[in-house]
Image 1: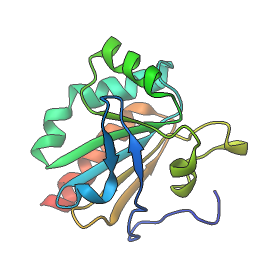
Image 2: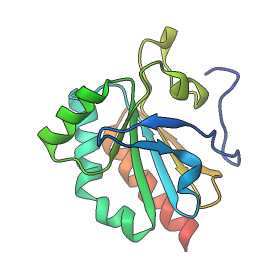
Image 3: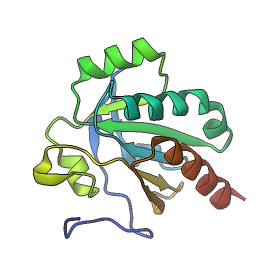
Length: 153
């Protein structure tokens, strides 16, 4: 819970990170769309696998709400690629290897050793509209969809 913790109503801190599909994602280039940014601890762990598979299974609902869904962890691009292939994940997985983006979003855990499970819903103007923090992976997908429905209605 560092001093630089972002809050609802803040402009989402911009970043540029490499994605598992070989591209590079710059957050500010997604303006005009809603963005669901979910930070998670580790590719392949039970909770993170569940969360990413739930995102995969409900991606159409996110797309209907004009939302781009992005997962971020400190895992390498190679790990992300294998994880995405194994579970047929089609949303973007970004590698925050040095933890800098996670730190800016207050998603870095104790001593920076792990990433917290925390989800940000960002509106079309780049403003953080909702933050969900829970150890329950399934709750993140539900909470993000609910928040998106509220800001798009």
